[in-house]
Image (cartoon, rainbow, N blue to C red):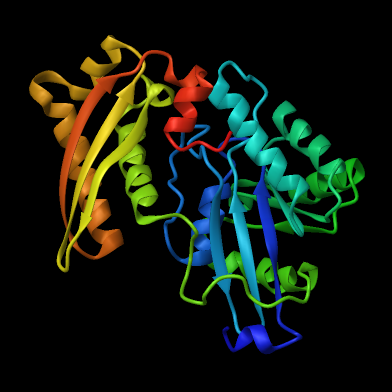
Amino acid sequence: MTQNSKNKLFKCGFVSIVGRPNVGKSTLVNSILRNNISIVTRKPQTTRNRILGIYTMPEYQAIFIDTPGIHINEKKAINRVMNKTAINAIMDTNLNLFVCDSSYWSEEDEVVLNQLKNARSPSILLLNKIDLIHPKDKLLELISTLSNKYEFSEVIPIMAKNRDSLKSLLSIIPKYLPNSPQLYESEMITDRSRIFIASEKIREKLILQMNQEIPYGLSVEIDKFSEETKQIRIDAMIWVEKNGQKGIVVGKDGSTLKKIGTSARLDLKNYFKKNIHLNLWVKVKSNWADSKKELISMGFEI
């Protein structure tokens, strides 16, 4: 039992971070924790799984739930699973942070808002990327418009990339958390395993390298994760859905796969603070993204 858990005034609770794809949810979590536990790219639907970011202060512990972006087109099983993951977080949390891009309001934002209206917990609206709004009067107009759509507990303009802009948010969150002993040790920043983090780091490099070609047909499984004192040995399998995709990932004479491996190795070394020995393979698993059985085998929460 930690010292904090003995303090009856200590607060601890779950805070979901929700919104449509690519509005800055993962960037927000990473900025709060000062650690890149969630991968970030400019491509929608980069986050596929629920990831906890654990933020512990002397008076409280906020457990942030980084969720997949809620989207309209549920073409495959993986899309339905991602939406279900995000909606479940909204329904089972102490506080919801609704992240919106302050430059425009979309149909998918409306879908998220409708889910929040069914939630029992309060919601704070976070208007992200406010540095791109000119003139500033437009921001006031947007706040007024969105406040008429729903009675948010707070409306806070932020820049998710800039941690200094999050001070107001972090000062407000504790009042929405229940009195409770902390649930995680103070040094923990995520509930995800080192193996999961490794697979996500590799997938991030794949998405960035593939541009618009096949990022949503990719998945990464770690076959071997052997940690020693000064190095980590990782064998990872990259799954694609079609034979043509395999050729794109590998590249001519393996050039693309080598680039991905080099970039991933450097990122993993910086994250784990150890030398990384990384082996990558590419195989085809037809239509895995539309198969519940395959998604379960790959670790998705169905």
